[in-house]
Length: 307
Image (cartoon, rainbow, N blue to C red; front, side):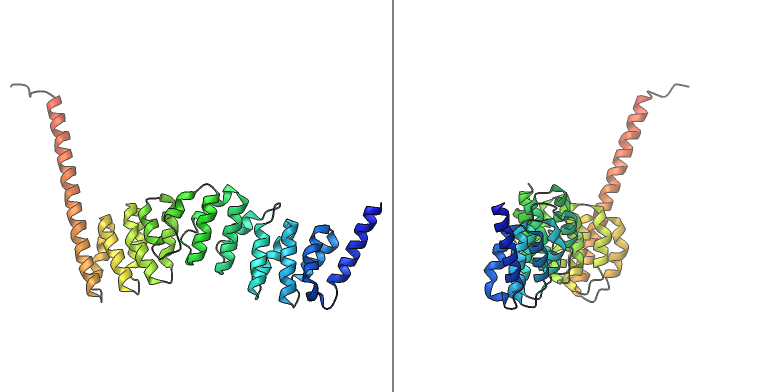
């Protein structure tokens, strides 16, 4: 009874502190109040997350994280867009610290958010929570346009039992070339998506590496890159199409012979020659196989009867 009364008095005093007009002078109180685990304090902390003073919002985000309660999720998600960087950081940490009612699907959706910080927070939280449902979406994020986000993504994958991604991704521009050369089939979809990257160097690295997968599914995407505004991208796409030696690309490569860039035109000539040679070898191989099959069929029938 006495303990309950003491707790009630603590909560009442705490609420008065939180409602004080100069509460930013007692920020440590806001953090300490989360230990009382009182619903009224919890609700007031949610209100403070919208306070006009950034330091108060920051303290409220930290306190809500200590609750580990999924009921604060929506408010903390909104705080990720706060104009103050310290509030965004605290909200991200708080979301990662949730220990129940984890918003896994919501975080998966946030891997596609326009803000790089939000995507990084989502990746970090998914890795920390250990839900293997997030592995696929995280793999799709390994080609994130922001280097820091890519590093967070592969760290999350390592925590989920996928350590190999850190062999190829370390936040450098060469991440895309290493992923293309990895031979990891699951990297193909995010690499194809990276052909839309606004950075032409990324597009060129990806276009030049896709042929290593030896997958005809990449041909339509590479053909599309033949109209890229940057010559280096077009040249890389042409070379990959030549290496793939897929005849469905020949018609488009013929148009590239009139490209405005000399290096692209030269690459198109070389690619067409290579595809033609490969097609000839394939045809010769089929003819030889047909002849062998025909010869075996004739020999199995025995000598022709004498008339």
